[in-house]
Length: 231
Image (cartoon, rainbow, N blue to C red; front, side, top):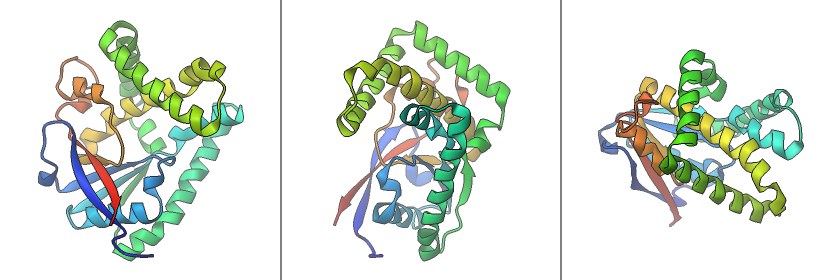
């Protein structure tokens, strides 16, 4: 493994905080994001271990069950263990980077948080779905995200246009609602800056700023974008 193949730079993401003031960084690992594998992930970890006292990694494995259900035409019940296996494999493959950098990050899995507070999860989930139905601004922002995801997937997987609505309703909306709701649960508990090598949903600012009285776990949270460029 080569060292310093990528340079990591920070762009302001969401929220009011200065990332340099945080002793802990949070990485929410999307298993479909290629930046969380190989030399790019090594560069991200190398950047983090020199700037933060601790690292918390959330392996978003069973979140991928929504994709697996659609792609393989199987039930959520059957998709969950397949998604969990993907998380197991990612952890096995990533151990080499932890060992090389001498890291012992705190690691949690997606189901740890799904099972953490079911009552709060259900309340947040109902509130978010209601906002999607009744708030035109939030509905528009979420629909734009759905459209962008669809266009990428359609191009890469050669999907038929007739599948767009089922793709949106079966994958993107359940995936995105779950991701948003669970983030509002674990962020105030872990207490760190969330760093992500990709785009962030801008409408999350609605909850971060406290403009609506729900998903209160987002209030005051800070997110940053990470850019990776080959040296």
